Image (cartoon, rainbow, N blue to C red; front, side, top):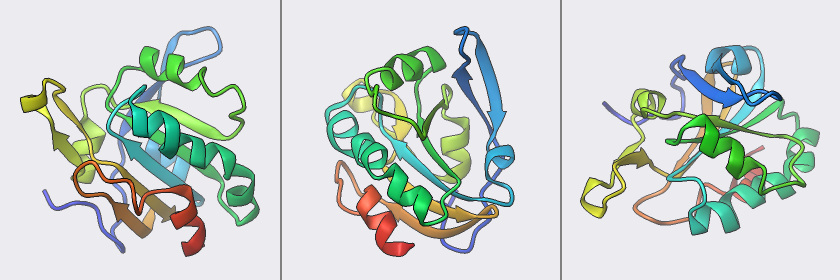
Length: 162
């Protein structure tokens, strides 16, 4: 499948999270993005160095600025289970706006065409690092990284596009 691109409508998909009582819940991406301006950014894995030290903190630190520019939702997706994503989210106590959603079986990542097979490194199928700016389900910006890079999927790059 070709990777999601500018002009495409994002596919619907179900992602998971833990509610306030630590019970697993699911949510449809379309329910979060329909009629809204959203950022969906994907990372190869929770608790990994670049994801934890650069990618996620950038969106948390710039969340108010993004909201001020009309962004309704900021969504972080990783091919992890909701328990891992919940634990990871708790390592960012300053976070007020980024939703951490789990794509445990990589179904949504595959639907976006953004899977990254790291089986040879013992990591299984993961997500490429990316950031999408989506308005009413339509992709306006699709910044997808190559390999292990972190150059175009940052909060700063999305802010430039707003």
